[in-house]
Image 1: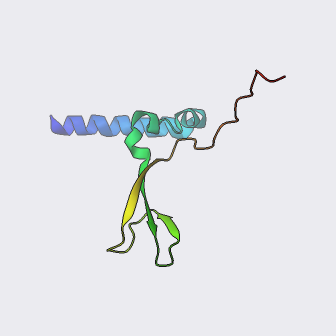
Image 2: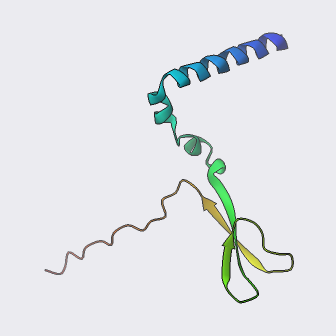
Image 3: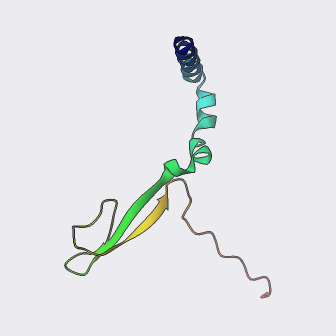
Length: 92
């Protein structure tokens, strides 16, 4: 029974891979969708700390041992660019 299931899964995976490789428009539609289904895949951690000169550092690896730091959770697929300010409609 396990061998039949393994063969079925392999056949489905191979068919899916072949279909996607032959239809780039499907691949383009699916691009970026994995982050909507599994948002934890696009999360990361940054470390903010000050070096010996007092300059702030933001890195993706922890600072040297003994250095105090703050962790920042990030999301790769989030637009962080601020929008345009709303126009004040009371002024003419």
